[in-house]
Image (cartoon, rainbow, N blue to C red):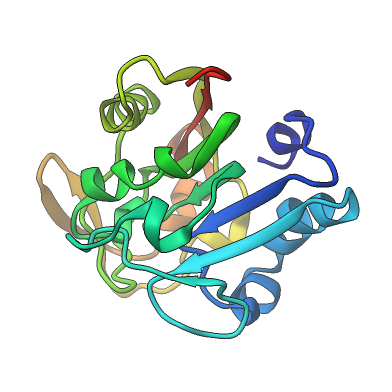
Length: 215
C-alpha cells in the first residue's frame, strides 16, 4: 500500500481521508505500521490527513456512520478529498453496499479511492464480522456499482499475501474460517501451518479507483 500511495503523486495542498481509522492511539501504538507506512510519508510531503470513524475519540476529525440511512457525505463532511482510503473496514459494517456508496461522493475529480478488505482471513468480531471475503474482481464490482455510471475507472486490482507472523495465531483455541456461507471452527494452531506454507497464507483484496477529472 505504501508504494501504491507514493505513486499517486499527492503533494502539499492535497488532503487524504482515512475512513474507519479508529483513534490516534490505535493508528500509532496498536498498529504503528499504519502510521509509519501510510500517513507519515504523506505528511512529510505536506499532505493533510483527516480521520473518520463511527465513534468519537482522539484523532478523529469526522464522526459518521457510513451505513446510517440519514448519512449524506456531501452534507455531513462538507468537502472532497484527493484520496479516500478505506482499509479493512467493509468487513466490519452491517451494510457494505451502503457504506461503499458513501465513498465516491467524497473523492475530488481526478482523485483516488483505495479500498482493501480480506480475501481470506479468520473471523474477527470487532465489533462484528459480516463475512465479506471478496476476490479483487468482486470488490471492484461492489465499488463500481456504488458509483454513478461513468464517473470512476478501475486503475488496478489484486491481492496481497499477508506474510507478517503477527497475523497468525499461536493459541490452540478454536478459530473460525469462512467456508461458503458458513463459519467453520478449526484449531487455532492451524494458523501456524498457514504461515509455514506461503500459498496457504491469508490474503487481502485491494482495489484502486480513480475519479475521472471531468466527473
